Amino acid sequence: MMWGLGYGGWGHWGSWMGPIFMFVFWALVIAGVVLLVRFLARQSRVGGRQEDSALEILKRRYARGEIEKDEFEARRKDLI
Image 1 (tube, one colour):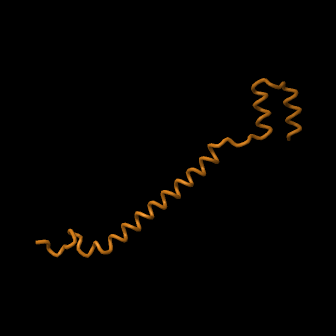
Image 2 (cartoon, rainbow, N blue to C red):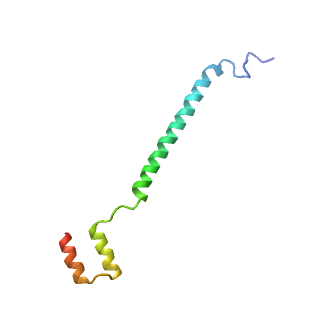
Image 3 (tube, one colour):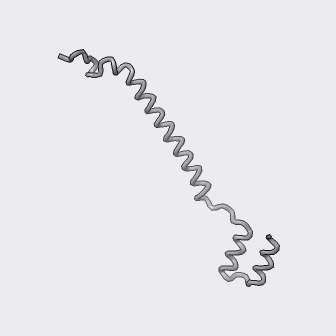
């Protein structure tokens, strides 16, 4: 005897649980797509190399020894 739980044991619950599960499924799919797009957008901003400022390039050149201190100071004054 099934004790009134027809439809494989779900009874009347199956009639309203199906749409709820479908809503939850699509909500998770949409949330996953939104999170993926946001993650990829953030990665392209942070991970992609941005153009360095002229002062940063000048500092690196000085640190590598490509230019002398007096040239560095003169160019830095021009930039600032």
